[in-house]
Image (cartoon, rainbow, N blue to C red; front, side, top):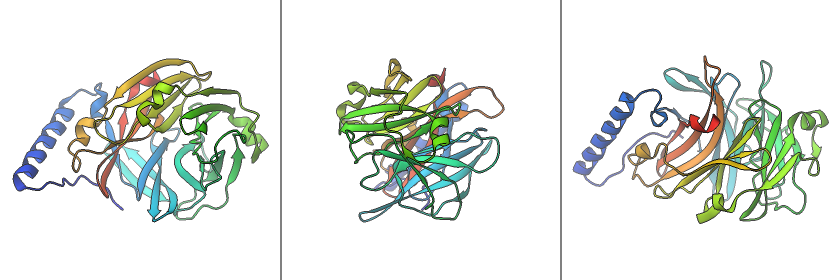
Amino acid sequence: MTHSFKPNVDSSFARLTRLLLFFIACSVAAASSQADVDTQSIVVDVEGIPQDFAFDDSGSWVFVQSLRKNGDDETSLVTRIRLTARGSETVDATLPFHVLGHQGISIEHRTNGPVWLWGSKGGKDGGREAIRFMYKPNQSISDVESYTLFDQRFMSKNVTMPKVCYGNQTLVVRGRTAPREQYIRIFNLEQLKRGGPGDYSNQFVAEWPLPEALLSDGNPVQGIACDDKYVYILAGRSEIDQPKKIYVMTLNGQVVRKNINVTIGRNIALFDGKGKFYEPEGISVRQLPRSDQTSAYIGVLSGTGDRKTFRLWNFPDFTH
């Protein structure tokens, strides 16, 4: 399935008006300086509904997790995309598979060799576990390592959304004891890899609750990113008039910064389809190519029906 900008309006005049406004918005963005983060986005094209993404060490590749639904049946796939100065190029993808949960993808940092990914475990009983698996294009993934990271106090109906922190030392996961009572746990990544699959639910380095204010107004957690100092948590609903939020927290759970009215990409989303859908889908820290700087990127899905566009918006302020 391809996602592209295709306005859906009722009259020729309305269509022309919306197109004119869209091109004006694009022209303003193009004329803005490179320091204006609202003008910096990457459009990526994947099959299914994008849910999360992760950059590799170089910042030149991004792996996107997307969802396919067929009635009550839900499968996920992972797409590998090359990033260039001209945009993005879809290179290959896994086949859809069930063991990867609804949302959450991350990559172990490496210099060469196979690509190892972490994801939420799928299935009705997978909400306390994360999985580790090798990226294999054009295959349905079945050979996975399962890690139990939450005990029986936590709900099995959950997606753990595991994130390998930039720096490759820490794994961050989300669990819940009730629908609106959610917790972050911090694990030593090397300990998990050395020990292999198993139960690590009592071996976390830190545990702390997500702030109630982050989850207010029914805001779901839509993405987690981290480096070796901070955890970045993205929350928000899909309605274009509803605020999106980002909290920056230490590895011990202290709030150091927050933005409770994130609007990045909204000006473009207003001209996608009917201009009503604006859903955050993932957050990731990227090593900027040819630079020693990192930057946070936020995924935004906008559009109407199956004509949606997925953009990765540069949001660097929160990694300084």
